[in-house]
Length: 229
Length: 223
Image (cartoon, rainbow over all chains, first blue to last red; front, side, top):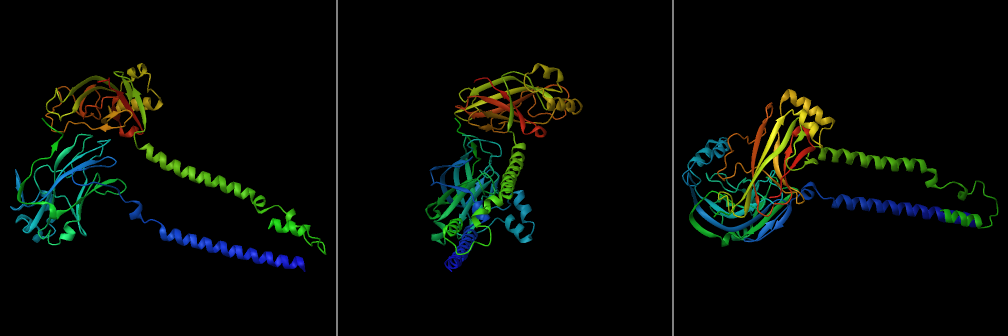
């Protein structure tokens, strides 16, 4: 009698323990499933923040953004932003639509240029070291640096260890860029070695476009490699 | 469970237990010992084999096994003999075309395709694979290669600066790239521009794609 009741109690306790264990396992599985990072999360770039004028250093990229300006027109030795005709690659890209091609040839009326003056260098290896990503993010939109100018800009510039290449990055944006000051004041510049910045350092520089100098025309020069006498 | 069972065994039972007392049976761990041991072995083997495969693929395609050669010594590699014959260096004070605070290093390397005779002189190299490489090269000429400048310790690596705006032209009589398929000896000349501080333990790294992960390091004299 005594032994039988003990046995029943033991069995009940064992069942309770099993049920509790199962519940804990289910709960744990749920927590793991709910909190597992997505690919976008575990592949995200290693972000390094820096302000304008400050040096930002990542794994194999170091950069300083010196100045940001906004201009209506860009001019270099062989190209004007308002006289039409992008680079060959731009034209090739635009062949999809005759309208686009016409628009490019006629220039892009109503566009505004954001000009970033920066210097960029590699840190420990020159193998594969180029400025593959230079993007300006304004609100929801991402603009990559233009390759329309004829001069050497910093776009895709080959980087040297400790020898900064100084030049410009130009971004072509819609003319109503400053219409929404809240968005324009919280733009940011992203610089990285690969066009796809995942799993490597990405330098992020916040840019307040509402505080940038407004110019009619900017003359572009070739990027310069190192300090010269 | 076991405690309960032993407690039960201690209690004076009115009737003898019909079965063997639970305490006498071997425990769950003991009964499953063999399976558990096998599972442990399998777990270790699975993790080991998978990681080894991943790491060997990763390191096998990258320059991870250097053969380091002292200054000016000829070394057999990839079916050719490589020898640093000359190094010219000048800071930005002397060479006005290069950026401030930098040093230009001009490394000259003699490449002798299929130099089996030289292999015997070299202490390094001349392993089995080298001999095979040399035999192949005797038919196909010297291999194509990639040249870099590397700094021991810091691990910094420089590309040739031949395409930089420094008004550099390869000296007549020298080649600026490896000549795949060459059967006659030739001289390579590669310019590097490094920050002036970087002068410790520099070497020219020669990589032949087919021979990775092995590569050659020709030590440069102290600048």
